[in-house]
Length: 125
Image (tube, rainbow, N blue to C red; front, side):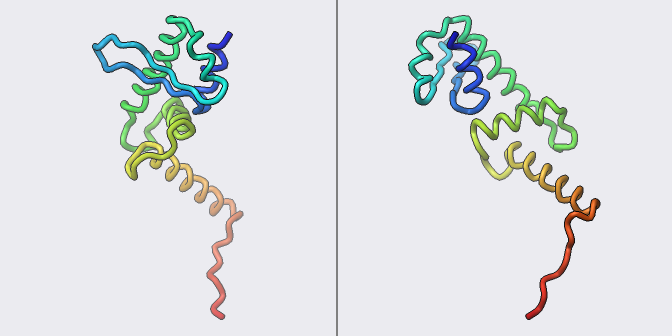
């Protein structure tokens, strides 16, 4: 009952899933804001592990990113977009910033080639 709402909130960035260190076998910690924080204690162990599995797979996608955004698969791009929604922009060399720069450049190129964006120098007055 609560699992679907918490999972949707995690995908939207309203819930954090903290994974235990590898090999430590610790408990998955889930933190939510607002009313969802009251629902977290009612998650079963299996539901917590399912959320942890999603978080692990997403982290693996981010860790295995090729250097060039052009080489990313659609799954890589989707994972980084979710990361932006959840965590915002990180350092200057982060995958989040690389994706936004790449998408911005692609949009600019498409506007210039379509002629939608007129490159007119400003008037000297």
